[in-house]
Image (cartoon, rainbow, N blue to C red; front, side, top):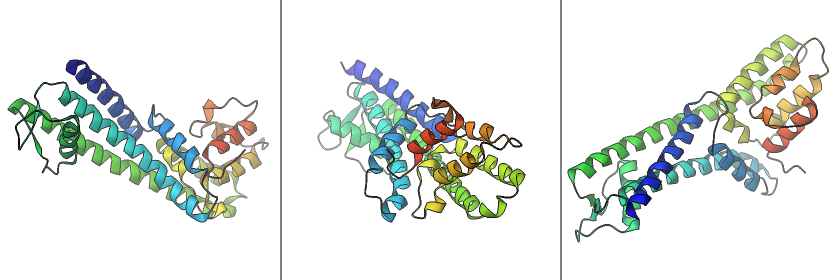
Length: 258
């Protein structure tokens, strides 16, 4: 039974870290599990009363939920791996094998690299495995911080573009260039779409949809091509680009839409 739990832990670790690396390091909108966690959290938080506070906190809450999934996934996976190795972790005071909670606590201290736990590795080999856990924790911390910074920078860039959007509305080429740059950034950091703002004019998904929908009939510029490049846009099955844009907005607007 212990061996089975250990193997299950190894599989869960591979799944969790694959999702983590693809989401944080990938330069496209691929995200096997995290995006589903984010969308579920976003739909739940969107049910909150439509106040300024909701629009300020919904993005950070979604990112925190995703981070919690990664941290718990890595912690529990390593705990199962250690549990699958008989007698790998012992209680420091009694010398007896650690309890399931003790395994989780032991891995938590290794991942955070703070030490000071009430358990210890039983052998030098297990101690070396603990070093691997510590390195794993540093990778998660480093790339996690980078992920948050990239996401918030994309949000800021999007809002910056919205601030001078009206000034560029008469120059389609300049506007297309700016929106194409923002679209590329959103594909690299799609979780920026879950951030909102108390000012409706500063909400990126809403304003992007408004600008693109207003120009889809422009025969001189292929705005539809830009719309199709939006993150996850290809998942929608509406009859035309305009209806797909509305479906896309329905998923990423912090306002509860019917």
